[in-house]
Length: 167
Image 1 (tube, rainbow, N blue to C red):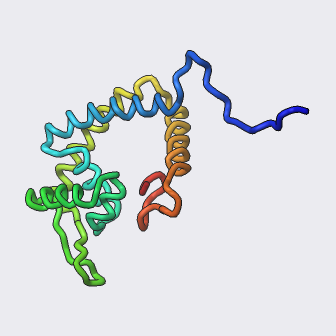
Image 2 (tube, rainbow, N blue to C red):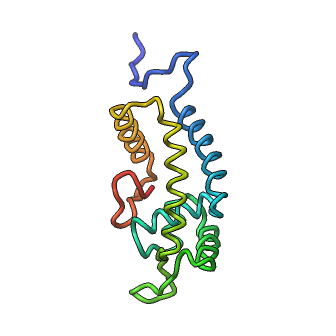
Image 3 (tube, rainbow, N blue to C red):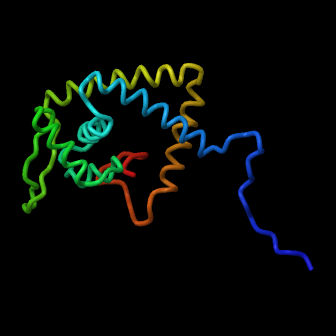
């Protein structure tokens, strides 16, 4: 009697690193360069993520931003409070009332964000220097699909999120 066959994903060759390891290693290298570049603008990576999301979707709460940035609501509240004190965001009461405050990017915040974007552009330029346009698209599409596949059950992108964002 033969054992039933099971369907498994092909295992990488012993000498080839796992794809998830390569993604992790790349993320760590990007993060190190990003942390260094953003520090020159007086911004943390978490603050940059919050500012970037507010540019896409104005009026998010600290809790919504925390979910997007993979930090605790308490940590994001501290980030937003700091950004507010520095005049980079303002918080207004939620239109439905309650205690929720909606963060909004200020003109000064947008200016700082644009400077940070240029630093990220430089990092990506170095990272992708040997990658052609077609491969860049395949890479972006593939990474978006992978991230979407690993999204926690029941979580959908935040309201109005473009494809590839929101978790």
